[in-house]
Amino acid sequence: MSRSARTGGSFEKILGISFKDPALLTQALTHSSFVNEYEGDDEIRDNERLEFLGDAVIDIVVADMLYRRFPEASEGQLTQLRAALVRTESLAQIAARFRLGEFLRIGHGEELSGGRERLSNLCRGLEAVVGAIFIDRGLDAVVDAVMPFMLQLLEETIAKRLHIDARSELQELTQARLNMAPNYEIVGTAGPEHDIEFRVEVALGDSVIASGSGGSKRSAAQAAARAALDRLEAKGFPGWIDDDRGQA
Image 1 (cartoon, rainbow, N blue to C red):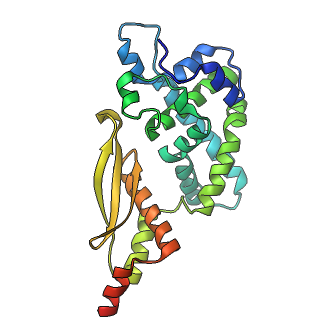
Image 2: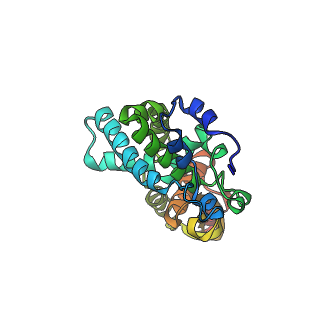
C-alpha cells in the first residue's frame, strides 16, 4: 500500500529522531492524494491536521530564534525576517535537505505530475513532520531537528537580502535608472487545481529579464523580481536598455 520511495524508518535516521509513536510519522508523510486512492479505509489519514499544528510550531520556533539573535531589531524587521524564513520556498528548501520528497506517501497521479518535488508538498510535508515531532517528543526535539537548517537559511536570507521586498526594490531601481517600471506576467502553472504552482516572468519593456515560481502569484512574482535583481547585480542592465537610453 505504501507508495513512497523509502521507508519511514530511514527518514527517522535522517531526522535523528526515533518516534515513540511511528504512526505519527507515517501520517505526517501521507499526502491527501494518497488517502483519496484508498477512500473508505479509515486507518489511513492525511497529514493536513499535523501540517496545521506544525505551521504554528515553526512560527514560534523562528520567532524565538530571531528575538534572541537580534535584540536590537525592530518589530518590523523581525517580521520581515520571519516571513522570509517561513514562506513556502524556504521551508521547501529545508525539506529538500531532509530529502523529505523521497519519503512522502502520495497518489499515483500526484507522483506522475512531479508531486515529490513540488514546493507546496515539501513545505506542507515539513510542517506536518514538525507537528508530529512536537506531539511525539516536544518542542526541544523540534528545535534540535530543525534549528541547524534554519540557522543556515537565516544566513543565506540575510546575505542574499531575501527578506527585502524584491518587487519594490526592483521597481525603485528601474524607475531611478530608466524611468521604467517592470511588468509581471503569469506564463504557466504546474500541479493540480487545489495545489497550483505559478511561473511568472518579469520584463522591462519588451525584454524578459528573469522568471520565478511560487505557490501563489505573489510569491512567484517575488521570486522573479529577486532573480531579476540578482541578474542585474551580476551582469548589469541588458544592452538594449543602455542603447535606448543613449538614443534618448
